[in-house]
Image (cartoon, rainbow, N blue to C red; front, side):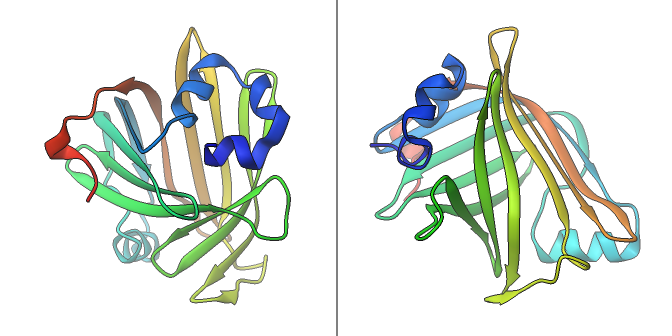
Length: 185
């Protein structure tokens, strides 16, 4: 059973078809499409973007997301243009309907909420190197997946208190074949 089906339970069936196809797979899934990326222009924001290895800004970039089942969840490897970044996504052990996404030393507890045309990601808490970040200094994330005009669309916006935008990316994806030589090792 896929990670999203386990986390969402029967609500998984209420997701639009394109989201179900994207998140219901065995082994590996490759999604390809296009993405626009905007980034902070502040010095602090630029430093954080580099430390977190997040992508550089660009318009109409090639997007490729490789998803691989792991023993506990999934590994997500994203390629936006020439930049790539990865995260691990696992079900939360104690909170039904939640996942934990870990990228480097940052972990986010995210509540997945099925809505009529898609899925909302609501970040409930963040930790850095295992230490909880107080809400007053924690980044704020707005993320959603939708089916619009029969296509899987996504949007993620991360802002910082007092500094504003850290990064936003939005685009569309579709399932693609995954040649053996390009599979995640």
